[in-house]
Length: 360
Image 1: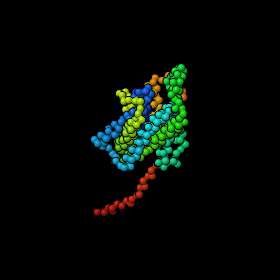
Image 2: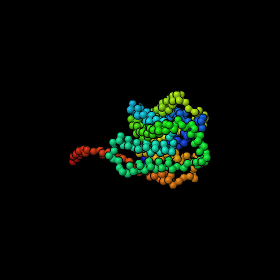
Image 3: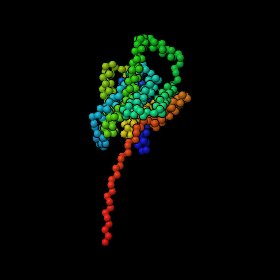
Image 4: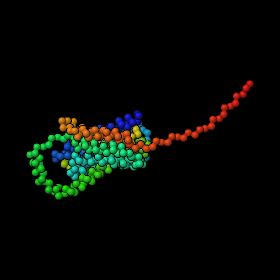
């Protein structure tokens, strides 16, 4: 019971951290842009730097000063680095989806709806429990995905622009959008490919990281260090090379850098929460669907509070929240648990006869 409470507390930290990750990073993107839009590469680099600070520098100091159970193993290092690379590539896929014209209103529901499905079935396949999948577990998984999608699609939005302003904006954009219109189909294909990249990467992230942590004998800091190193390599090294090659209408300033680093810190804290949940006995087949179901709900409420949209909450949005809670409970209770370990066989030993008492 104690371990279950620690598991719930750990993935609750991830849900909260990853729930605020998007909006906070969005502020950083806006403040860094010099064109009135949203920057991509410089905020992504800041995310990598935050992961390096929280996921590499701090754990390395703690590991050296205090130590912890576990060992560095080749398998653990490789799988933990692979997990971090999957996380970073998923973040890059989000950026690419937006870069090719995708909109958050349908990109994020597709990601948060598809990634748990990939995660659950990969976890069940790796644990060789495909035959133990029950209809209630599948129904709960579907309900979580449906609820998360409903919450994101039906979330309150800011009032629309007046018709005159929308028309003027459309007319101004139409003058410069001719080259883009000719490649609309290509951009749609690239959007779909980018979303598929995120779904596959984030869906595989939990099971792969779980293997790495288990191979390091359930170490907590060592896998996190590997995740931070992978993020640094992809987000900072590759991100800077990409920025030097293509350029971007953005700049490093205090507010943009602060919020982007804060977004990266939230992402790194969320990764630590997942590692802690695994360390206390949580399984990817349970933890990851709950994270992917809960994080978008937190994200939505955070956005509502930040933008003052309480008066626009609708019935469909509330119904989505109820679906997420009910489905999450079904996933948690009816996840495949496997057969209980066989009880040890006790072999009776012969009791030596008591020594005969001698009468005097």
